[in-house]
Image (cartoon, rainbow over all chains, first blue to last red; front, side, top):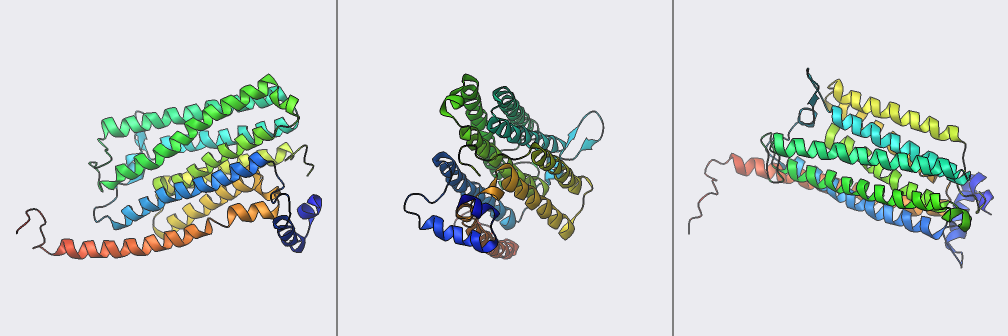
Length: 226
Length: 115
């Protein structure tokens, strides 16, 4: 039945929903942890959406011009300031980490323990790098530019509140992800999943990490580029 | 898909998507770097954003290979957000209009309460 649903036509795929939901035993034919992770990520989607919608609302209603993120987040390396450059580097770091995580999941299913551990460690390290750059960005904004949650010298006072809430909550997710990945990588190294007989846990950790990258795609588009 | 081995796909698929995400991020950044403005800017930002989000969910998170029961359970509820966004945008425009009107009345200086 499973292979029929994957390879089947649109009609059989719709049919598979009816079958799955009328099943007496289980609806989602995936490991329990994976279904739960997806449901957690769905709830997290709504939390981040509330932040971004709140940001949209204060930006629309403000009669004072919104600070231009392109200039606020510009950085100069001795010469002309390059617009948004730090944010661009952070974006590339996070995408790179998503790639290494995807490869870690793949090597896990191939039973290549060493490659899985190394790739997960690389992912966590890139996550640390991302949070480090974010700490630098926050310091620059708070100390040098005088941005506060209640005001800033550049324009609409809500800018700081939206910025600290959204990037702060995302940075917290990245930090939690680094800890989560470190724990799972250590278990892979110990051989827990060889004993258990499957590497699904690595894929579930991967789902969380890709989600963090996914949220950044939206933050990058709506907060930094808009 | 055998239950024991889970999601196994060729490495080349991941490398291609990885590369594509890099290119799309580069494009997103160029929108700002080239200082494109107005509807062109907004539509390009949204286009690259949805392409990146789609590839991450479909390939990296393996949604493309999941069963319809899971795909619909996860991807349909966020449609409610579109209504939320629309409501808040409409309401936001209204509040902005009211503020513009109120703040333009010179007598309206809410600094010292009378009575």
